[in-house]
Image (tube, rainbow, N blue to C red; front, side):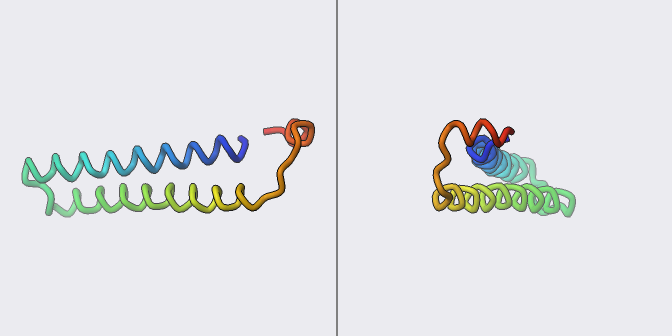
Amino acid sequence: MSDKTRLWFYILGSLAAFIWLGVSIVQSMQDGSLLKVSNIIFLLCLLVAAVYFLVSAIQLGLTMRHAPVKDKAEENADGD
């Protein structure tokens, strides 16, 4: 998998996890289960996943920005 593809994976994963977290919080507030232990653990897991994807995307983006530019022949020779 190329770095650009991995970067998009992390970005979309982070976005999806934050959206899922927001929807889950709203739904649990509506049905009154926000303060149940199982729900808190689930929401914390979603938060950890979202932050992990976000941090990974930022790190990879910074790495790609400062990496030397490869030409197409080198990129194809490296493989995915």
